[in-house]
Amino acid sequence: MLHLYDTATREVRELAMREPGTVSIYLCGPTVYGPPHLGHGRATLEYDILRRYLEWTGLEVRLVSNITDIEDKIIERAKREDRPWQDITTKCERVWFEAMDGIDVQRPTDVPHATEYVDQMVEMIGQLLELGRAYDTEDGIYLSVETVEGYGLLAQQSLDDMRSGGGERAVFGAEFKRHPADFVLWKYSKPDEPSWPSPWGDGRPGWHSECVVMSLDLLGEGFDLHCGGQDLRFPHHENERAQAVALGKRFANHWMHNGFVVDAEGEKMSKSLGNVSNLLDLIEQFDPRAYRMVLLQSHYRSPVKITQDNIDAAVKSLAGLDAFAARTASVSASEPDADVLDAFRGAMDDDLDTPKATALLFDTVRRANAALDAGDDAAGQLVASALEIASTLGIALRGADEVPAEALATAAELDAARAAKDFETADRLRAELQADGWTVETTKDGTTLRR
Image 1 (cartoon, rainbow, N blue to C red):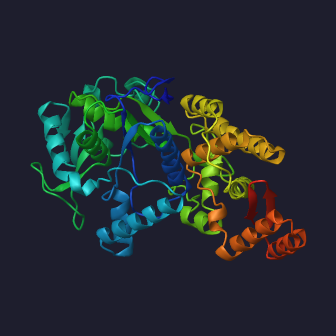
Image 2 (cartoon, one colour):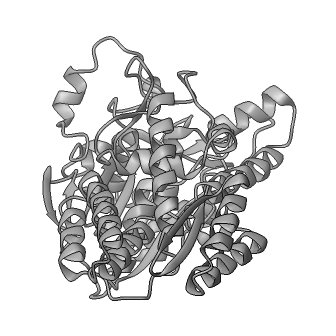
Image 3 (cartoon, one colour):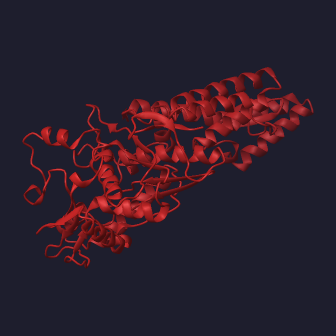
């Protein structure tokens, strides 16, 4: 049974399912105002790995991940570039999914857009006003966090601690707020800004309102897991939870947050800091699978640096796995080794310990190669185990199916010559393949080629 660290309870605990056999997950998606960076790639890859593993265990996964297509940063860019805001969001969303496809992230089950849910957000805000949990100001509608039981759970701070720890920093909208942690639900529109009608005046929803409305609409109360980057824990996820609690609704049962991608100095990579590495650039310059491999070898809750050295090491590791796939392409199908898969499950069920699972993968490949060299009958089970683990982790191996037909035909001729004990012809064909840059490996199961 999968156990994950829960940010709310601060412990590794079982991921309980509201409906047996089905896992409901909400993942905060991108604000589409610029190209995705490595931090975005980490968030989507970590939860892609989780999803693939859950599905491998036989569970059905419904993954909802939104698109924030109206927000201050979008409006600011539209003004700066004198472009329609819809032009920015449409193009940036297209780039987002181009990048996700590039790193082989499966599409979410549902991709709701914030602009599709404005009416529902207006309805929710009206309910909060009626309950006395929100209040109207000349700037907009704000949620009163002092009316929300347990506010600060995900921040791991009480309201008093937040107030005393604030120091002298400026608080956005402080002149309108009853408490510094109160947050805007509805912003009244300014000239030349996108707006929607509401009973209180034209405006647009605050960022924190969209995800609570979309997750409850698509997944229902008490859904299983809410995911996102560590930077979203507070205030975004805290404020989502606050609105649901204020409405008397059960929100997420479990909270999962991945660590930051950091730069050489240990700073979180973000657009606001200006130390962003564009995900599309990485995909164009390196094997796109390398980013997944680097993350698999780091625990999802730990910070990770993306450097030339660890990308190069990942590319080298992938070349070894590809060579294994090519070598074993003709190995007879077999059932995986039960002990190996049990060890894999044990690692993944222990707070998604992908470094341990990946080490198991490489060890199984080593054992399989040794068994093939020795002609051991256990080779087939080990090969099947390694390939199944790689597939479950989302590592798409490039094996013999990518060898050109002409080279495969020459390899078949080589095998035929060997079978006929025409070793002179076999040696000549081997030399031809090697001259073309192929590594030629011949076993009792036949000849395989790899670069």
